[in-house]
Length: 72
Ligand SMILES: [Zn+2]
Image (cartoon, rainbow, N blue to C red):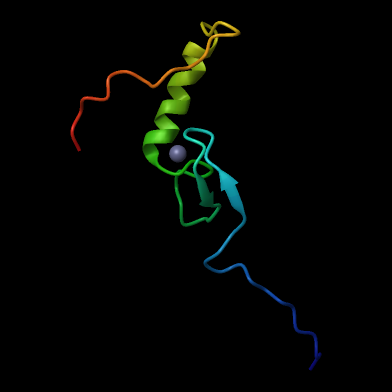
């Protein structure tokens, strides 16, 4: 028997990443199907941004996103 003991700490915790969608910090875990996003919502938003990104004008400050009237 080899007395080699590797310190494996990759079980529940993972590296901390920043969600490309909202900038929220989260754990990059295989448990998260939306990684590296924090949620499905952010992933969907990012996919949509792909198409609209080409329409983005440089030097345009992004204000608070409108259309926030959906409860829940
Ligand atoms: Zn997010």
